[in-house]
Image 1 (cartoon, rainbow, N blue to C red):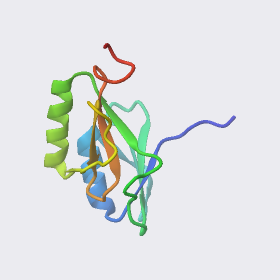
Image 2: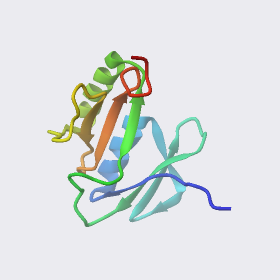
Image 3: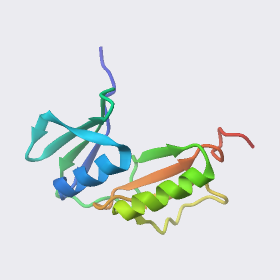
Image 4: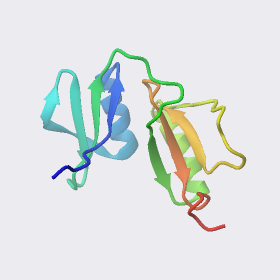
Length: 128
């Protein structure tokens, strides 16, 4: 039976990406799934695989067709997490596709991979 695995991000600097994403999401590298061009990261509580990083020579896309959404429950939490991620090495993206009153903030990881920090309290599915 086919099952969905976990997202894989292409990165140019594997050690830097491991450092960023393990700190950003409280993940740990899985040693048995490691190679010079690949790292699998799992939840620190051992609840399973979460993300993989693969060495890539292609540049990150400015408007990727697929990206990660990192979720927060409140605007205050969103603001704090955005600041924490920037301190870890993420950069704010001057996103040209923001809707009016966005519920998300667009960031890029140290390799330029775009991701969003979403405030679920303001998301379309959240309370009005």
